[in-house]
Image 1: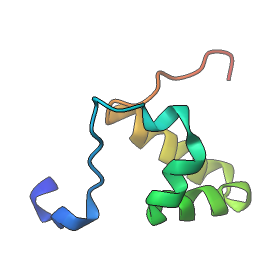
Image 2 (image 1 turned 60 degrees about the vertical axis):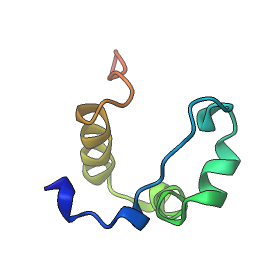
Image 3 (image 1 turned 30 degrees about the vertical axis):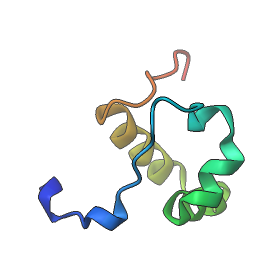
Image 4 (image 1 turned 180 degrees about the horizontal axis):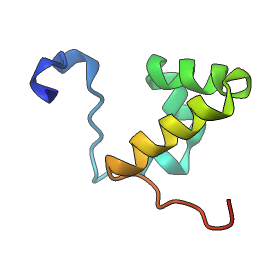
Length: 68
């Protein structure tokens, strides 16, 4: 399934440099797809937000927050 993603659509980070997470503004400047998600986030229904977060977590992102 991942083979169908165009190589130019994938963002690759050099882990010898500063983590992109340490400068969130640079993430959206360099990734138009992420910028679109960030721009739309406040208007997304809770169910859509939950789905996006679930996909990120399954893919190896942040651990789920407790107390939700």
